[in-house]
Every structure is written in structure tokens, then in C-alpha cells.
Amino acid sequence: MFSYILTIIGQRWFIAILLIINILGTIYGFIWYESQIVNTPAHFLIFVPDSPSASLFFCIVLAALLFGNNIPFVEALAAVTLLKYGVWAVVMILAAAVAGSPIGPLNYMLIVSHLGMAIQGLLYTPYYRIKAWHLIIVAIWTLHNDVIDYIYEMHPGVAGSIYPYIQEIAYFTFWLSIISLFTVYLLNKQSVERQVEVK
View 1: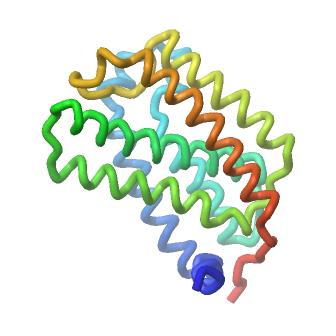
View 2: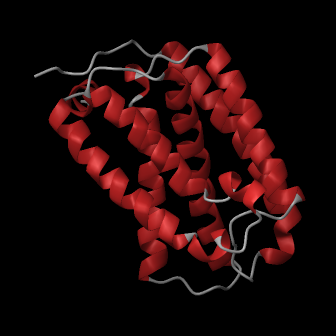
């Protein structure tokens, strides 16, 4: 069954559909971050829109795969950040709900879309050509981003009900970065390489 799924996602028609979905999601994500972006100093801008940047990286990966190419560094960047920010967003929404914040249709949409982010990045592992040094560079980027987010307070907005726990959130985010890097490393090491269907 899983082998069949991997075969389907490697077909060009599926990649094209997924690319369109991710382009739309990326646009929506940047619109979502608009209020934070306009109030962010220029030298921090690249670090602020976390989720849409992750999906943008994946759009580049999908576009390359669509034409039979690989960009391993961007693949590593996409896989790690999709997993990290996909999981992070879901955990923050659920934590806020437990702390008393109301949860509505928009929250459920965000949960589903961010879970999709995390899963899609990992599913394409057999189609990546990531090397260890790519992940080392991505580790520097990802952990540096955590520093910018929580030392300089450029992190995504969180519900008021959990903001008093921002130090704990920072600690959780650091370890989520480590786990995401390690997960992508292990999956990449154990996966059997596949080629995109050219038909």
C-alpha cells in the first residue's frame, strides 16, 4: 500500500496538482503574515514568515521534480522546515485550546493544512537526493532562525492563553528543530531512491 502511494506521488500529474495546491497555500500564508511582516525590521524579514517560506521551498522542489531535476539543498530545507513548522503550528493551536482559547473552523483548517505540510515533505524523501552536508547547512539555518525568533522576539504570534509560556515554547521549538533534522536525516538514509515518472 505504501509503495503504491510512493508511486502515485512520483507521477508528474500528481506533482503538478500538489504544486498548485502549495502555491495557493504559500500565497495564503504570506497574506496571513502580512501584519507581522509590515512591522518587522528589514534585516529580520527573511526569518519571519516561517510556514509560507517552508511551503515556498517545497514549491521549488516540486517544480524541479516536475522537470526531472533535483535541488538537494532546497529539498533538505523544505523537508526539515515543513516538518518543524507543520508540527509546531498544530501543537500551538492544541495547546492554546487546552489553555482555554476558543477553537473554531479556521483553527481546524490550520491543523489539517499544517499536518499536510509535515507529511508531504516526508513522503517525498525517496525522491530527494540529500547529502549530510546539506543537512548541516540547514541545521545552522534552522537553529539560527530559532535564535532570531525567540531572542529578538520575531516568532510567529501565539494565543494570549499560552503567551505566558513563551520561554517553554522557545525550548520546545529548539528541540523540535533537532528532532526534525534527525528525522529527515534518518528517513533520507534509509529510503530507497525513486525516480519521478516521466510519462
